[in-house]
Image (tube, rainbow, N blue to C red; front, side):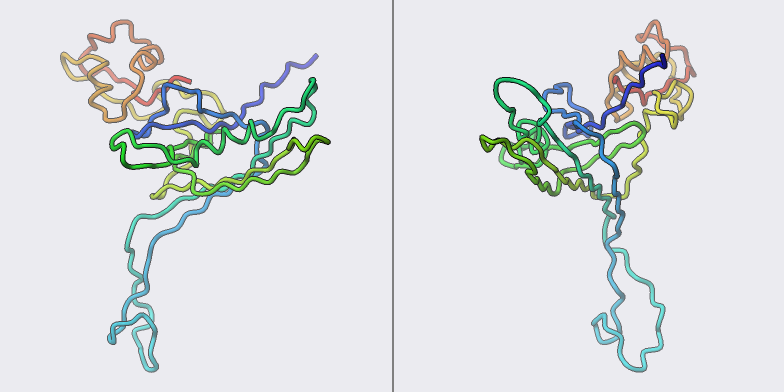
Length: 241
């Protein structure tokens, strides 16, 4: 018999305010069915140049023609995804409400008190991760469509369309996964050089990226993280899966 294939599921992961995955994964949510398509759009904030009269409308006889469009702010990257949830095939004494699954998605659009300022409410930062694809942002919109109901009026099937937005132009390539879908091994990305007398914990803390130094030590085969050789090359981009 052929070997069974392990299907990688897309996942919504909560990020802390430093942009790192939270240690508490209770609010993370794997999709029930992987999406068929992912729509990514990029845009810049630009304005048309002003003419001599102080407005942006061209006037008869204006020969300047190809004046440069002005860039006025950061770019924006958006991700649009449609997800499906279905509990109609489940068996039991009572039907399960599909909204028990979609509420895990709705968590990411619900504002929460900021960790830095309890008087400020923000939606949680979220990462959509699926194999080599990764998108970090906040949930801008969510639309839920209940498609199928039981005889008791319990919704059993739902389509959920979400839009995530990031106030910058960002790559959607997961830096921790190789193009073949497996985790990257040390040496396949730019490495950091250890200075004399430094420890792995110090390198991780000074990198500005945060990170799990135990996972980094394991991935780089470092037996003594408290004492590194001067000039030793270390991959600091490792995250624990």
